[in-house]
Amino acid sequence: MRSPLPRPLGRHEHGQNFLVDDAVPAAMAAVVAGYPPRPLLELGPGDGALTAALLRLPGRPLTAVELDPYRVARLRRRFGDALTVVHGDLLDVRLDRPVDVVSNVPFALTTPLLRRLLAAPRWAHALVLVQWEVARKRAAVGGTSALTARWWPWFTFTLHDRVPARAFRPVPAVDGGVLEIARREVPLLDARPRDHHRIVDAVFTGRGRGAVDVVGRRFGRALARDWARECGLGPRTLPRDLDAGHWVRLHARVAGRR
Image 1 (tube, helix red, strand yellow):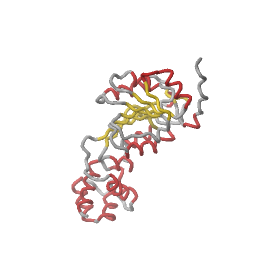
Image 2 (cartoon, rainbow, N blue to C red):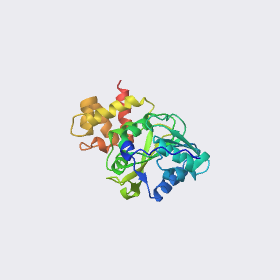
Image 3 (cartoon, rainbow, N blue to C red):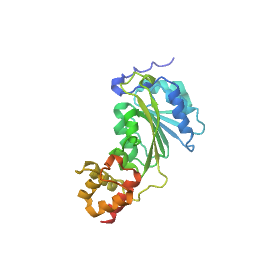
Image 4 (cartoon, helix red, strand yellow):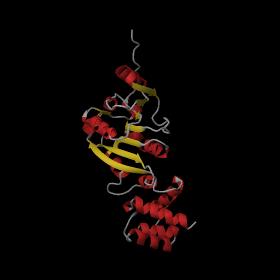
């Protein structure tokens, strides 16, 4: 006789919205299918809608990390030996393995999960379903965020589909968006990330009437003038307008003066 399943924890304990539109997992799995075959790590599989689509991809063993013991048991019964299920917190899982990460991220955990991903070594791709505006911002659609600028030399950020709120249960207050983060095979900078982060933070938080003015106040007028000329930047260019190449050239000039 099968043992009873534990009681499911409520959505307020996990902050997760589950996918009920099969087209969304299928589209995400299609993106993953374009990656070179390697193991997959799914964070927060919930009821397994995305899990089922990922398991259809050949040659990609899948491990799923789920916090809710009720859903851990259900996933094990549903998928059997085809899926390795780990009972744990997605914010605690080790990310230092050569895997591709896939997740329908609990919206309340978007920022801490992205920060953990970007700071972790070795994983190759991360395909995450997050809030639409967060996905747009991280992909620098309509302007760059400080978080994206901090990590651009090591990663690319690509915006995929917009996922309407009606595709989830419970229905969230905002639409979702599929964001792809890919580790660059060759980084744009041969530097410690924290050194680049200091430069980005100084520009985003510094005083001035534009990026060039801020850089001039912080790193010197001559450096700012030469950087602006090299990049073709004007006085009205804001930090949010800078692309990866602008940041790399700024880092090179700041590092070169030390």
